[in-house]
Image (cartoon, rainbow, N blue to C red; front, side):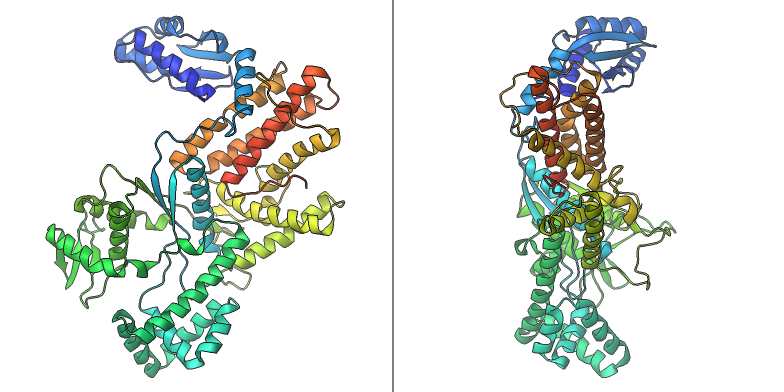
Length: 574
């Protein structure tokens, strides 16, 4: 079903086409002066050398808006203000309530989308720096899957490279059984730090480590078996964190750097054959067009080092080649921090030059900023260490438990524990997703766990409060209403918010800017609060009661679905 904004935009677009050569964009938006305002007349009038108000009058006359608008007025220099009729609002709400996807149609064209996200390093614990990629990536997967796309989750593990020489040698020094026990309890950082300290202090260990790297890269069976052990134990730990955080990554989604090893030589050969490979300081490189350093010299992607090894850019080129040529991806989203912006621009440029990334495939760097402490610096523990992601989740749940107990002491211990888990994890996620992802944000426990403002607890509580209306009234949501009447101002404001859901989801799926959805849900919950305060529900009677119960149910459904797209569960009671 078309959204209200789409219906209005389509009618106005047809009207512009009828009165302006070449037509014009209506530039429709929500307005404080009416329900919607079309600003496109001004630009169209300049182009056509006509008076804006006269042109606006012609557009209004040509537009077929009687079934949608109660009033259509021209204001100022030529703005068109539109107030939607109560009948149209009621009809569209009825259609939305009867639609199992709340008015959000599945994508007209089903695409294959690769989402590259999370990407922790083997033998290192996940820390707060992995939070944003994991949470944003999970929201992207959920939103695109709900749109009906075929989504391939790619967890690009750091599971290859020179550090594995020292890690395998340390594993052999302490014994496989001891190493497995140490890694299985999640002390990956301790294992890594010990190996690193030995590497830095012991020349004999350092030499053994270097030889072990050669053996690993040469495919030595015993070395590969030990490497696989490190990877398997790390993956078990990562999966436990994902399960705790409530994200959709599984063991089938691990696709680390090692996956592309056999593709690296063919990538080099292909780049050479295409004439893109150059030699610089003994290394083989690609110079993407338009990238220079501070001295104006071309910036290279190091494809093969002078010692024959490969740069991580080579792996990224192999990955984009595989994803476009083998997976037939229509879209690739790399959920990676903002500091990698230039790197991905260079990779995309080189892939286009090689013919691997064509206009048929869209590649996006879904960039994000850093998580800061209240001191404005990168978030760390009191001791100055990087905060483990698992510890962050545990603390969120513990803090949420205290807040939930204070909010509703009547909950049983089991209910409180479950609600605390959902609220704590939701608080972490919404604190991240409610901010423009390219900006840094401050991690503030007090703010994110508040039951006021644009927070997960506020939105979750709004949903639970609506569901409690039906429990207290011992009634079920009305079904089969063709129209939901909204005669009161607060009902009307809530209706307009509800009808904006489909358009919001469409924009978010396109931009992967999840703060837009978070802000929409906050606006919806706020509109419901005003409605609930001004329009009695259970104390009303007859059709008024039915219509208001229908508004309550539709709001709860939208909050539930919208939060689910963000990876947040909305409890039925809190």
